[in-house]
Length: 580
Ligand code: C2E
Ligand code: MG
Ligand code: MG
Image (cartoon, rainbow, N blue to C red; front, side, top):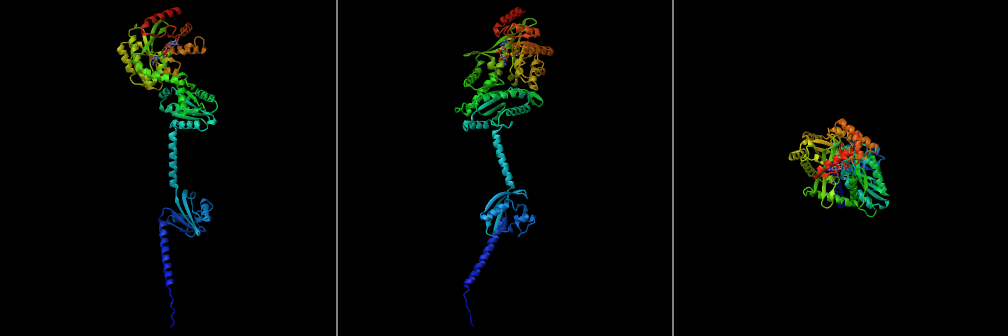
């Protein structure tokens, strides 16, 4: 017996090792498979022929739905992609043997996929997931962010840039490209917008603002910025401009553009704007200086040149300060007894006798002397002081008039602010009661700045006043914009033609035509007609010929203190006698 003994330990060990390795590989493959199955991604493995060698369940369901089985080319399921974006990325990964990641739109499914592809020498493992929803969320988030950013810098009503945006852009144009030219700030404010707002109602007033903004925009160049600061406040950043005149030219274009009325819900609405202009001096002007300068110029425009424009000059600051000083001093005027009423007679032409005295406020300022109501009434209206001042004027006028001959009335001017606040009717009642003046001897003068049309509240107040027995006069007739329709909205007892028309007499044909028309209107509507501001005998003759009932003016008598009423009556008699 020949026996061959061979040590197979190594072989056995190798076999055992191989078995262990196989088992380990199988374990790791199954571990990998279970990982691939449990991942939220879809996984596909391809060989170099694009054939699908493996697909996890998630991916398989997609492939099978397109009629593809394992071992077939991926492009059988997605023929339209064979030369598309996906294929390009995969080819690159294989050629360069580097992983690629990308997002692409899968047209056949209408979805966005995020893809990671890992190459190996024998094929490609592709991990992908549907990003469509995240993309939509992301898009919404970006849109929301953009909208918030827009809202923070724009005004909701007009969609125009707001104050914040305006300041940023102004700052930028002042600092960034000074060599392009200088810039100008135009500050705008609508004249009488509050009245239009009251008359039209808020919704229509908003429409008016939008139309106004559109019309402004149409007058600007693409480099100009129109901003809405809220309410009736607008601003324009103009620039770059080479000369300061370019700013005034723009302002003129705007003023001209506003000559055409607006059509708001079928109503023709005329609106004017006052404009303040500040031009960059080119010597390091700051944002604040320009904005403040334009505001000061606007303030000046509103007081001196309504409906027009004013260019800022350093001296204006002083005027503004003076006005603020008036405001402060006016607070003390009433308690310190610095206010006084003067009385100016109205003469009835048929009898040549004084029929009424108009009470006109006078302020004796301790330093400045007498200040005109034209100067301090707007300040009083702005600060709300007009309420106490107006109440005082009513009481004082009634008290004084109670001592006059019974056929002479007293006229008191009312401010729209007194209608806006509560208690006007009560105040009138109280003044009549305290003085014992007969209601028929009190006349109240209102102007067209008091909104009546479509304003039930103001009409109701007038009616209540009328019910007390008081008479209502329309003052400064012809200076507002709604004259004729205004007269029809309430049965006034009296129309006072504004002085500016009398001033044109007897020379100006236009003034003559208007003055005559108002006389006719008064006769038709059975309202007493009064002409104000008569200074010459020629004017008196013309007015008498046109049939005016009453006249008032320096020709007869200037406003006088209460103590000189008797003398004023005599002076009027003398004047009338001399003139006839
Ligand atoms: P108004 O009510 O139209 O008063 C007439 C103004 O014309 C008065 O100015 C009067 O002095 C002036 N005047 C009268 N005759 C002539 C004339 O022949 N020539 C010229 N150039 N002027 C004449 P005044 O007193 O300066 O008052 C200005 C305005 O201030 C008044 O205009 C009125 O709107 C307002 N005002 C005066 N007193 C009061 C008041 O107690 N309350 C309110 N709310 N406003 C008042
Ligand atoms: Mg008056
Ligand atoms: Mg007047």
